[in-house]
Length: 323
Ligand code: PBG
Image (cartoon, rainbow, N blue to C red; front, side):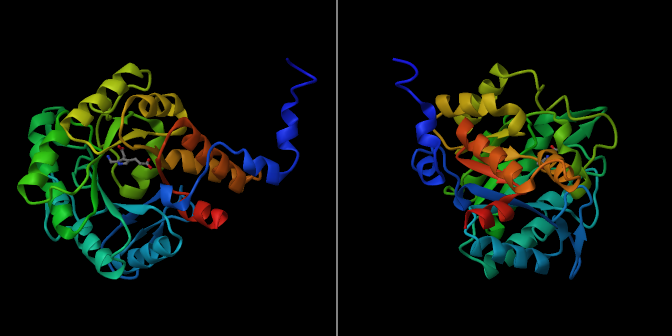
């Protein structure tokens, strides 16, 4: 019984009507804000390609986390920029490393705020790769030990959740075992399970000073053409003990967010990465697009695709818009 019996416009007549039948909702509690922490005091060094974002020294970071808590956002994920980098990524797993120190400070100041930490080596290696470089390649198995030590050191500092983003094979299992062995049985692992070798990480690499000094990350991050392989990556991470599974980036991979949601019985995360944020900001600053509407439309689309949790640089703006 098509038109004129069915008129889809009836349920679109007013905002009250549209609100009643809206299928997907967005709440601040579903958003996670990425933050960059650096050494020093009173530092707030703006990231050129990410308006509104900055490298923050610990005191400034704490202020940002207080705001995050006040706005009711789901949590923060911390990325550390160490004083110095070396071949062994020693700053990644140092007990008094930048991330570990930052976690302690934030936990002390805002204990209720959920703190996640990115577990990776690329911000800490002199060559900018995510693991131990042997010859011209990143050695998978030799890197696992660094990752396990890093995850445990973050948990020791008080992180509520660890998020490995390096894309080495087997790291979730090794991290689970190390956390359990150190007494952190209840620390969940949020696996960057389907992480693609994406051009959209460009602004982040400026922010985190983690651009590889030679080559690229295609021998460990995924080929953007591969969706079935993404499902296999997620299946393996789940078997190894991942508690949440992430797809990254978000908008170019909505199909995979949906497939993951239909397939796996754990919360699905999506990372709206730096380049996705910067594109919207750049267009908005040129007057070519409405910033708030582009932000909300992209976030609701990521939710509609199936993401339970969204890591996004829009977390503050979106939470304010939703308040
Ligand atoms: C670390 C890491 C990256 C991002 C998150 N964790 C960079 C990369 O893999 O090069 C990207 C986040 C973003 O672009 O916002 N390995």
